[in-house]
Amino acid sequence: MADMVRAGLFDGLVSITVLNTTEAVREGKRIHDLTPTTSAAFGRSLTIGAILGSSLKEEDHKVSVIIKGDGPLGRMIIDANNKIEVKGTIDHPEVSLPPNEQGKLDVKGAVGTKGTIRVIKDIGLKEPYIGTVELVSGELAEDITQYFFYSEQVPSAVALGVLVDKDGSILAAGGFLAQLLPGHEEEHILYLENILSRFTRGISYEILDTPDVKELLQKIAGDQGYKILSEKEISYHCDCSVEKMQRALISLGKKELTELIEEGEAELICHFCNRKYTFSKEDLEELLKIALANRKIRIIDADTFEQ
Image (cartoon, rainbow, N blue to C red; front, side, top):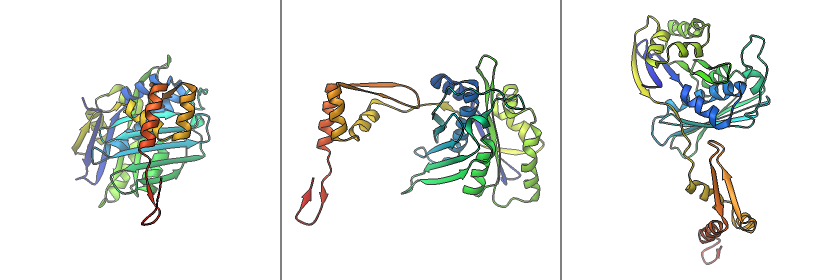
């Protein structure tokens, strides 16, 4: 069963993407040992990453979302790709706040209201596309809506939600993105303005009741006919490896590698999945040889070389 479905309404003048990120958020909670508060904030951020990943055109395209507010949880970084494989880091997963005035998890208090959302897209161009907007609420749905409007010039409506049980487990997570496409008219603007008001309980409760994204799409679309454009699965997936960690160590250079060799070993931890990689003294000596062998030669002039 698909976790993401995208459809066109009004003859393609409105696009709706519906996502159920429950399993990905559960895995993120397990890896980072999140509290209910940080589960809600990190889970919404993972859903933002999944939304952006779902729009990438090619398999090698990637997107990163960096959310940095003035709240106690610090910075969150989410990576996603065309397959909607998402992963993320959070500075302070241990943050726990009392419920807000509405009795809900205080995402705003954890994230903060001053800061930025930065989106970095690697879509095969010489330089990555980078868009940055200021936080406007800290609840993240309104904040990413601002990003779509100001950085991509696309009027949008975004719903994000994570439903956390009393024992801290994740009951449901996900959201939807509705966007106006070129050629839209006044009725489509009104449809977009009203779409969020139809889900007063919150999108996470809708996902709990209707986990099938196609059925949820029908609820969101209402009486409007639609055409499904794409379907995909979503997963929390980290692509770290021994080879990538070796390259990271080689990039440190001679001085740092020599210091690690003197210490006897090095342990690297992937911040996305908490997997540990240990390199012995012999491993490090071999990597130092590779680093020295790969030193680049820079041409100073036609007859002189600098190593």
